Image 1 (tube, rainbow, N blue to C red):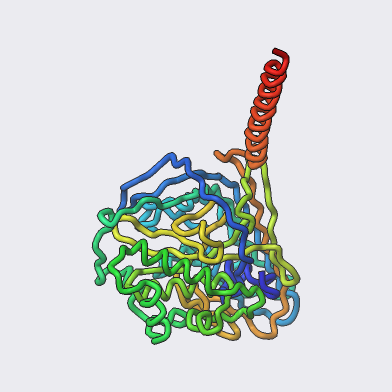
Image 2 (cartoon, one colour):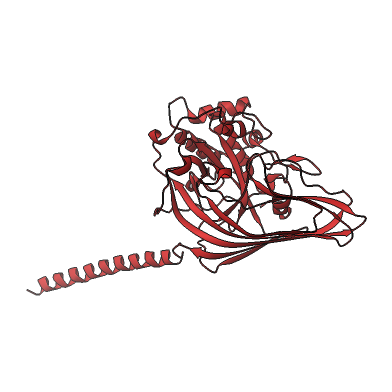
Length: 414
């Protein structure tokens, strides 16, 4: 995480943020799991396997208290932990990465409220403002049941892939246009993208894999970047970035190949890919004006007709091409959020949040997560099984040596 990341998640969850504050260090590699139990061709999504899943109870509580001075107007934009399913209109062509049910949503202290607002990227927000005098408070409480599915895409054949419709809205939102920090008209990036892919006629999946591998192998991770989003051209020219720059560069190189791609942002329960949550495990995260222990992160989805939005994480290494795990909560997709008062650009929409420069306030954002269902084999069983196999092998070798020794002795006795 960056030095300023202690403030990052509160911006992500209740007002716009420059997402370069969301970052995690490069991680140790981990093997993909290979015991799929479901695959679905429905809703324009296919060729995916849900390899494992974990269901979480998630409780969110936020309080902001105005400390001093005359009444001040505050504007809030809270992102919800949306359903991300193929059968949900708002997340069309999205595999079941996140099955979310909101059980409770309460906001107090507001003056005006727009609950459940959807933006052009189909993110859902609760928008509200409040005029607060001394010790005036705003609170928000939410309760979710969320199942995170580990999904992998394997053995996609070229015959499985449909034909792109470049008049589709997906291309307008996620491919056709140069945008701040996604500079698809940069000549250097155009040359780079074409060089990576090469002149040969290869499939969309092969193009994506070549670009993914190039980004992972050629950028150096830097967790000390400022809050300002840096973007694809900067990442290429400087050969560095955090998770946001890794994602922005991969997205831009894909878009140059006319492959729609977008950034997904959210937070992790751990940056250890070997973690295997079991029923009863719990985590408590918080953000305040003084400190934070949240792990914000960004990753990538690219769109393939008849297959859907395929997930990748170029920051996390080769085992995260066309794969996602059960450790990350999805908050937003999209572009062009602004962070007052500096109007730095990030990935989230319009400048909704604001407060007077003279405002003095404190806040606390708590996220409590508990595992309520898990189909994972406990991690400790893997080394145990390994030791059992090693023990059997050693025993077999010892028995063989003993038998050979006895045979030789017997022969020597004749």
